[in-house]
Image (cartoon, rainbow, N blue to C red; front, side, top):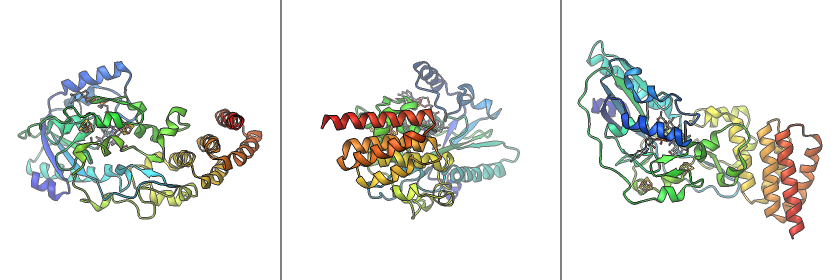
Length: 375
Ligand code: B12
Ligand code: SF4
Ligand code: SF4
């Protein structure tokens, strides 16, 4: 099976017995009590997540599969450039990994006629990391990502539930020791050891719809989708193998650090070509443009003023709201931006009917006026 899986394009494979995930059930319940979850993107009921038999009656084994996605580093996002997390620069892993796991499942069903199997990647009930850990593919890190020996944390995970009894693999040794680099590096301090407050993780915040709560806007920096900070500092990632699958390379027109002005002018057709094929596509064009507006506000660059003034006229409520915030921020930090920002905000204030945008404009104007008074 291992050699077939490798020819099918998987980099990691391991087998776990399909016993209930008793430890994880307890941890999930405790986490829920602490208010750290459930995150809107995870399967909401605990039982099907921890009892594989509820998904495939008679299940005997779970085959965990992983695929590496780290590509060559790209230049950092400077000036008027945004930043896209590595996991969504190339083609959407959901389809790629699912199709490869499905090939392994079909091959197994050919070997054992009558066998049944079910494939999941990310969006199903299984706890992809807990399964992979039990199957010996890697070990849980304090940043809550699964660390593998060869590829660090830069792997996508999925699994095949099967009623074929297979010899299980052994879990590997524990990671981390006394290291706390990821906890210290997290911009929102949402990590404690092996636990996260999922609703405060910037990966989640950049994907949420609507107006982003004020406390996160500045720490988002130039992030357009996702966050990699806790993985970037992880020592296990220093020697991770990279460049294995061309499918995960950035789109050459956008790259991992897209031009923010290009994003603000993005048409539906551009979005379809640049983002729809990636794992950042599912949230739509407005989410990317809203985050680009926040990145412009955080850029500290005078060239961001004109596109933000234009964004005040957008049909999208979150884009107008964040354009107002961005103009307030730029106007406070750049003397030459303050005057044009006030004029544009006051003009928009006279026509704006949305209460959330009206509030953002009022906040931006009052902060600009009080900071002008302070000079
Ligand atoms: C919801 C979700 C999110 C949420 C919540 C993340 C989270 N940590 O749970 C958000 C949107 C924030 C998110 C972010 C990211 N995600 Co995500 N996400 C998921 C999803 C769909 C469900 C995860 C889930 O159920 N979480 C809730 C519980 C299970 O997790 P938990 O709070 O960490 O609780 C567990 C641990 O704390 C552990 N635990 C608790 N105490 C202790 C103590 C010890 C000693 C130990 C060992 C363990 C331990 O046990 C708990 C129960 O299992 C999974 C896919 C899946 N179906 O599993 C992908 C998944 C976890 N995400 C993935 C990725 C790639 C990411 C990002 C890197 C994307 C990015 N660059 O922005 C970030 C990473 C952020 C981070 N530091 O974890 C990959 C992870 C791959 C890997 N190598 O680990 C997965 C597996 C998707 C996939 N199929 O490949 N994600
Ligand atoms: S992805 Fe970013 S915000 Fe989320 S836990 Fe890691 S460092 Fe913190
Ligand atoms: S950065 Fe350190 S503490 Fe965090 S997961 Fe990596 S080794 Fe563990």
